[in-house]
Length: 418
Ligand code: UD1
Image (cartoon, rainbow, N blue to C red; front, top):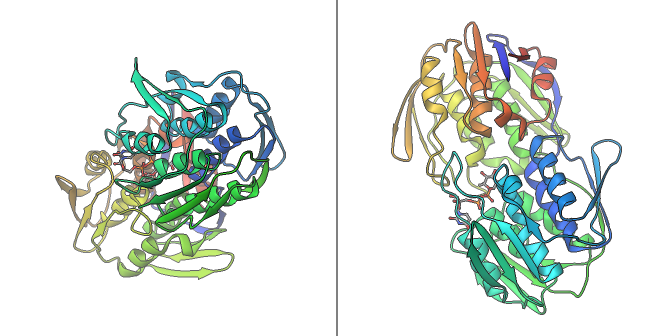
């Protein structure tokens, strides 16, 4: 078992580079199933979710190769299986994104349903309703979804909620459908625009990705692509918050301010100075840290994936902040651990009242999910004495070399095996 040990209290200083986006990279990997040609994905972060995706692509018959400088090459020349098995889907929900590409390319797919996860029940009904509208016959049995369609047909689809995954699954499936698909109430996250750019390079005809109405003209076949993923806005936001919570000064090279408007606005509201430039974003800790209410929302609202990290900052703010989580029903698992570090947080339904305290104190704490784990790392960076974060396999699913990046900024942090 591995743990992260942090001796807190050091202000972080210096420049750190943001990695490529995990959440943009995963759908790009599965988009490679749409074509027999070679797909090159540049800047993929080396995180556990990427490794899981590559294993899944190999199980389906794709050839996967490592290029230089975080480049991955996938060639799904022939597919030997159209089944995404439970053992891989259960460790990573994004595996469900194989459903749309597989049914579009091979006419059938059998994909395990992901089941619940720590942060909520996370059903897949919106994905399935969308694919049904495209003419797929969907049947659910024995924990699997089976989808069949000799060829999908374009349709007008209104999503019940702007689900990121459902938008991606339907968009990928529609590229090979006959006729035009219009997705209304589509998710607008930057990762959707990035996927559309790669699909466009493959020969797909897509308009409006990144807005709430996406239009796709189906084509008969698609070619390969060579695409660099967008910078990871959630990692960038996390590193900015690491600079802010330690009262330091950190430049996050490659961070895109246009993808982080909601966070930047909140940081400025609490007195943290932000300077956005073409090459990245610099954060300078507040003289006197204020308070702010935050409500998570689909993009361009405040990202649920930064809620826990922002809460860590607000545990040290002056006054009471109310943090409301609207995307996932159970995303406050970090609260009890923050409280063990001396934070004053009370949860009432979907809201948490965070009353700022003067200091946090280091403690042994347990990570419960990806973003909760990094929230505890941030709290540990600011806390007195030593914080020991266990169950860090959650962290490794989505953060590339986090301890290395934070150490280079002056943090006293190390990974230990127990
Ligand atoms: C993606 C991100 C995740 C982020 C989330 C919200 C990836 C790999 N993951 O997850 O990091 O936290 O967006 O920004 O990109 N829902 C349904 N039915 C569905 C689909 C979703 O009810 O068929 C609900 C979910 O339970 C959840 C909400 O919609 O409450 C948002 O989910 P969604 O946008 O689909 O998130 P993911 O694509 O799973």
